[in-house]
Length: 472
Image (cartoon, rainbow, N blue to C red):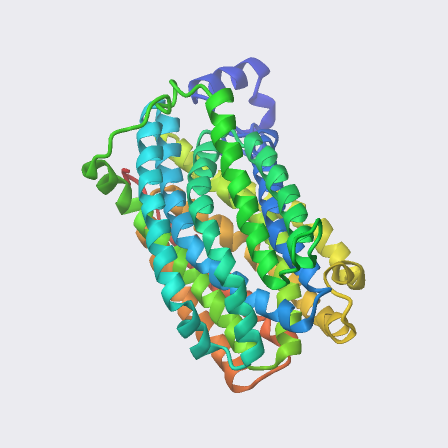
């Protein structure tokens, strides 16, 4: 329709009839319900919180980078090993987040509390089981995978203290899921600031032995991170009880445990839990492949992993927001706005990662110097950093499409799509690292392979419309 035929009054009436869906008067395309500003308001606190949480690993790496190459490499393997276990709980909370977001979109606020508490019950039990199994089997598992005895000893020392963090990290993940699903993400920023500051203090005291405390080295980094997670959980409990309308969300009293309720959560949360665990397990395999290349490549990979985490948190913040808003949109009956909303998130995420990527690429020694002063590691990491930065061309759309599928409630499909991607990813890593033993910088091209395949598979499914009518 020619633009001249669109009067301002007609445009407004049409927008009203479309129930908050905006219409582009010049292009005639359906636009998203949420403006860029509204998405930014939700994603920004989430972004800050994720970046601040990533600072836990950054501070561990930065401190241990000044202790020694063995400690730096061991913390890479042990840190990812811990995250693999943590992702079981985090993945379950992600599924619960999708369900709570759907209830939020439907206006069924009180039912969010029921999901929250049943998720909490499950995660506390899961933390206890994971603690027992990890304590019993960590040394045999790592011993069968790590070739260097010094790195193995340091990694086990790290896990000895780090595993206690599960009792705090799992419940805190449910609080995070609640705040994202209800779009009250500013709280996450406050919590993360408190956690990171606590971690810096604990690390400084415990790693180097300050204030009369004996120096614990790598074990101190692990214990400091666990204590920081304890502080984080305490903050969530106190803040929620005092600042949130607990009656509105059904949080004012503990929900009685009903197995039937947990069974309703599992069809969504089970697949996000398994998917998260397997996804990080392959990431762990990546580090094990690199470990066989030597101590120096492993140390380089740990530094790049930490930097990658900073960039990835930007993408993850918008991906989490995208998933939550997709679920809210479907709950409000606005399925036609889902795909435009996903592309809107992709554009914003690209804009956000462009600046740090350019800075890291142009001034690599500035960012690398924060993590280590070991000359060989510092010089050898530059090429890997460049490869990493280029991978975000495909990482951004991959995560937005993938998380949007989870947001529709099709978590089993999302799991199968990523599983297919991970099979190729592991085969690629085994070929270029395990068999060909290429330079560590070329090893990071595995991120390009993963992002490209995941983007193609997830975009194809989303545009197919098979997720229409999915109920959770």
